[in-house]
Structures are given as structure tokens and as C-alpha cells.
Length: 414
Image (cartoon, rainbow, N blue to C red; front, side, top):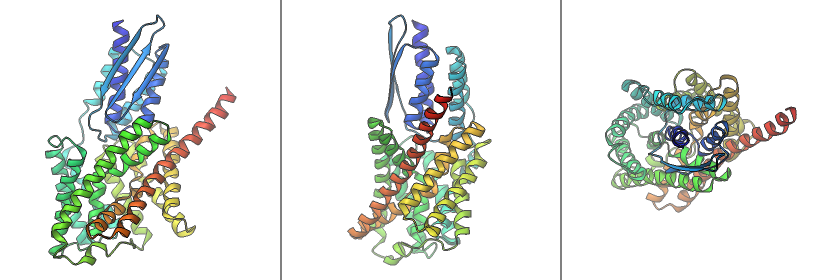
């Protein structure tokens, strides 16, 4: 009896660590189900939402065990996530004892993280790369470099003090937007749109929103509600912080500073490709990608934006269609790399999607709200929603197609 309870607890602990380090709900649920099957439970049920996970299992001697795990504030550590996924797949192929499983999980969790200096360099790469990507020049890049350092200091000092995503993002967005507007008032980095959009991506709320919609499409309604709600609260926090900061500055800054680049990005696609690749490499490093995963993350980011540019410029696709096609490519690329290298595809679904995230739409929607331009607010709010749906839908289309192909062809072959 005790051994069975310990086994269930160990499996749930592994699942919780995967969730905390950035895994998707439906992927963790699938792995847990396979592990219960590998360990020969008779029946099982698994529930996962944003804040907790629970499982009930039945043994062949008609005993029932139920355990619950709370899920702390989720972060991203792609290196640990890769190792945890690999461990789960190893347990499915060759089950081991409870003590061995716990020892292996502890080894992964207790691995030393990145050196602090590397985190700051990665944040600067991410911020500067996307500042240039969103039409910024050298002054904007310098401002964003300062903001990236401030963001890392803020995250390190306040991450454990402010325990809600809305408040954390609101305070962080206020600080960074105030830096951007102060610099603009001093004549440094006048393209506030590029500076702010790059800073918004550092808070990375778009990923959670896309994943929440993905959970809905997968049929995990409760998980989708929780994930989407958290992401919306995070986005609301960013909007509130920017809104409050703008209110203080709009009275003495030129209005065209805020919107002078509303439509046009960088004209040269080569600069877009280089800058977004540098930015995505920075984000991959920030999220802990190491070893084999980092080069594939960089290549995938470059190719993702290439697909978007080709879809828009060569085939005149709408932004939604181009985003959908690009996210389909990300999912295919992630699956192909996983098939060849066994690196979990979730790593690339996270790191390669940043060029597609709707950071600029959030900025302009907030500005429309500040200046009471409801047309701007509605149009950019709609663009933000459609972009997030396009990302999630692309992932789901590819995953479902792969699942159908495997079931039809591989089941027939067996």
C-alpha cells in the first residue's frame, strides 16, 4: 500500500516539476497517463489546471489512491524541462523504483542554473534584438539595453516579493515604460513604440495566452480557463503599468512620438531576420536553453520569420494567415527536431515563436486607450487576439495531423 502511494506521489512530483518549468498541460497529462500505464495501474484519472494537479489511480487489488499537487508560479527553464521530459520518457520505456525516480528528479531540479552574468547578457540580447526588429535604431537599442538590465534586477529583487502576476507585470511595465519615456523626453530613443514593444516581450505574456487557447482546442477546458486567465491578467498588468506611465508623460511629449511607427516596420527583411534571430537566441538563453537545444532554437527562429515574410511579401497573406502558417512551421520544425534528436518539441514551441507574439498590438491598444482613440484600441486589440489564436491554432493543427497519421499508418503497420 505504502509503495503504491509513494509511486503515485513520485509520478505527480515529476509532472509538477514539468509544469513549473514551462510544459504544456496536455503534454504533461499525456506523459502521466503513459507512466501510469507503464507502471501497470488498473485505472487512472488525471486533472491538471493552472494552479494544481491531481490524480486518482486504482490498483488490481481494488485499492484507490488520490493525491494532489499545487503548482507554483510557472517559469521557464528549457534545460530542466528537456531533462524532465527525457526522464519521463525513460520511465515509460523502462520503469524504475520509486527511490530511483525521485533521485533522478532531484538531480535535475538541483542542477546549478545559469551564471548571473549570462542571464543579463541574454536579456540584453533579447531586448536589443527585438528593439531593432521593431524598427528601432542605435539610440533605441541603447535604451532597451538599460531596460533589460533593470528588468533583470527587478525580477531578481521583486519576483519573490510580489506574488501575483498582474501586480508584478504592472509594476515592471510601469518602471520600464517610465525609463523609455524619460529617455524620449531627453531626446534619446524617440521611437517609443520599438522600445516599449521590446520591453513587453521580456514579460512574455503572449505565450501563456496562446497555450491557454491551445488547451481549449485540446478539450482541456478548465486548464484553458486557468492558463488564459493568468495570461490575460499578466497582459492586463502590462497594460496598466504602461497606461499609468503614459498618463504622466502625454501632457509634455509630442503625440506623434507614441505612434510614428504604427504601421511600418523595418523595410529590409535581412535586418528583420538577423535582429529577431539574435533576440530569440537571447530569450532561449534566458529560459535556460543549453547543450544541443540552443542551436536548434536559433535556426528555428530564423526560419520561422522567413516563413512569415514569404507568406506576407510573396503570397500577400494577411497577418493572421501568415501567423498561422508560421506557427504550423514551428510545430513541424519542433516535431522534426524531436524525431531526430529526441529533444522535447515544447522547447522549440516556446523559443521559436517569439517573432510572432503580439507585443506591438498590445502597445498600440494601450495607447489607443490612453488617448481615447477607440478605433485604435479595437483594431489592435483584435489583432492581438487573432495573432494569439493563429499561434495556438497552428500548433494544434500540426499536432492533430501528426497524431492522426501515427494512428492510421503506424497502427495499421503493427
